[in-house]
Image (tube, rainbow, N blue to C red):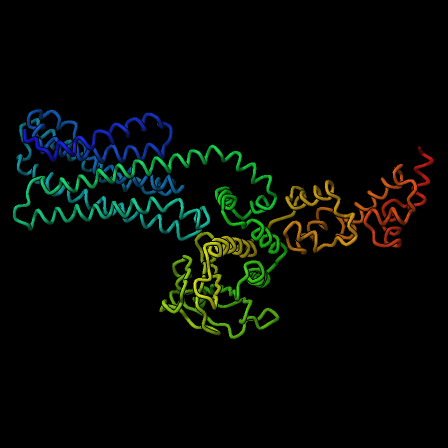
Length: 561
């Protein structure tokens, strides 16, 4: 045996992490995500154990141990990939490509089997030197190359997911993936060190055997411990989150403003909006309802830019649309200094894909937040120079529709909140623009969440008793546009807004006319108590609904009682 302090130390350091992973694998045998990460850590350490057994000479004493050797180094990147994709809720992407990730493992599994048979048959097919050379060169180099490719592939996938709205608003995505990106950085760094050791053995005299690998294995083991405990922490957070999801979904269903966005955003996005530390639901609800009655592209884009200025407190807002025929982004709507009035843009410009910040956003379909445009050579001067810029793509089913852009005269003006809102508004706008170009549309139905909230408000709090109640005041209470509220009442209530309020006031006055507590009230006083602001309006509305004047109705009810 060639046992020494180094391989003894490595083996002792590995035993606890192996035991912990085995425990977690048994504990969470039905949790696929946990299985992926703990099997990855376990098999990665098995790779080191296999080398330690060879280096210490144990396999020479017990050759049958070689029968249990597996090319785990080719399975480990696949398991980590499976974990990463499952963690960011992209398991379907991994399923699509998993066969390519498994090919190296099965290829080398076949070669390992062949070599084992070769050993058992006394090296009848290949001499021992050839097998050793293959294991020392091709096996290791291929494993390193595969690990690097897989790590870089997965890191780019996470960045792509993070830079788009993905399934979650940006700041939720960033919190979710930040630790995973760090793990990928460390993994790539360790792989590069591994490459350095391989090169060093070839070019540096005195570097031979497994000696140069001991520090590298030590760093890998530290990485595995870090991944184990960080992964455990985040997996526990996910489990806890899932336990609370039922309650969260109930909260979402109870929040009429979030529920009203269900035809735009999926369940995961709604959960994230609900969890956001920013109060975005009211703003999104307003944008969604404001867009409802817009029938063409021009109305949509001008409504969006106007509301961005009004609701987000911006200096300017410009919406570019992608002209596929001319292959340029064209300024089509603007509020601020670019607004020429009558839905016209002052000196509209066109930007090619890849040119400037807006063109880069259009080309890459990824947002850009530039805190200081003076430090960004891509910045294109339009009407006047500003200091910071935020641009977010309008994408529908991976197809570019345009870019939503805003600039500010202040450096570092745009915050994470602006970015989150711009991403959500961009998706809202893209969905609406796509809807306009199809035969499908969102129709008002009796289960409309705003209509339900309106009825509940009127029945429980009786706001119609206020004679000053107006369409604008009610729309502000519901945080929807006045036009959308008018459509709701007209379509679902079958009457205009004035008639809708007067219906409640008439019903209230009917109760008062026959109630003992109002027996000493005059007819006009009852009308005013019910929310009418004049005798003539009260009498007209009452007779229209009942066919009787208030006096005739009171007399009739007294006779019937």
